[in-house]
Every structure is written in structure tokens, then in C-alpha cells.
Image (tube, rainbow, N blue to C red; front, top):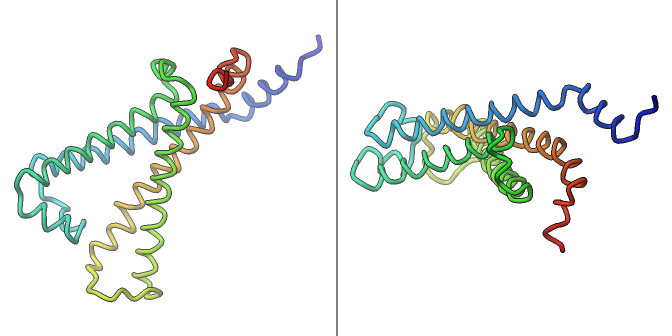
Length: 188
């Protein structure tokens, strides 16, 4: 029995293992987001461990206490939870309730922000730590090491995982979108 081009393409995609990789990266992106949200939540409820690794103005505000650092940490935790849910929407059945275009553009925007922010801050921090860039003011090298090796790297890894999950979602849903005509509904 002869196979159609569509069946051959689906067979090639399935045999490549790409769907499994995309699913794993979506769950990994969610885990990274939720773990980061837990750190923010810990700081929101008054935890001070590792606050010194943040450095700068944020550390000073956190140490002073009050409503502002709590609200900032809670907002950060909520944003990170939303990012984790966005990653899960790419692979969970309830994610189908979100229009494909919205999910793709929202998750792609989030991924781009995470990769750009994480990548740029890791690169610049590494250049400062290695002596290639000499800032005019004082540098908290301990906090900068933490940003390069943990905090900002965390954003970069999260963004890359989310990007891989997006590619998997796009590949998995592209055929269905063309078949259902949903890819062109916004243009009609």
C-alpha cells in the first residue's frame, strides 16, 4: 500500500523522537519556572537565605523589609508560575483551549525575553568577572558570580527549554492547523 506524503512526513517526525524531546523540554521548562517561583515565594514570606546572592538595590530593599519587597517577590512568583503554566499548556490537553496563535505568540515572546535577558546578563556578568569589562563603580563579585552561575543562567536555561517545547508544539499542531483551516482564520 502506497503512503501519502503527509503520512511519510508524520512517520519521519514520529520516528525522529522529536515529540518526546518537545514534551520533556516543556515539562522541564515548567519545573524550572515553578522552582524559581518557589524561591520568590520563599523571599516573599520573609526568608532571607541567599538574599545576599542577589546583591544591589534588590538586596537592600529585601533586607529593609516592609510591604514593597513582599509585593515584588509575590509578583515575581506569580509571573514565574504563569510561565510554568504556559510551558505546560504546550503539552497538556487543557492547553488546547488556548487558540494556537495566542499560545505560540505568547510562549515565543516569553521565551525570547527569557533567552535575551538571561543570555545578555550572563554574558555581561562573565565579561566583568573575567576582567574584559571594567565597570566604573564597585562590583559585588559574589552576587555577580551567583547571577552568572545561577540566577540569570536559570532564566537562560528556562528560555531555551521553552523554545524547544514551542518548536515541538508548532510541529505537532501545524498539520492539524492547516487541515482545520485554523491557521488562516485570523486573516479571513
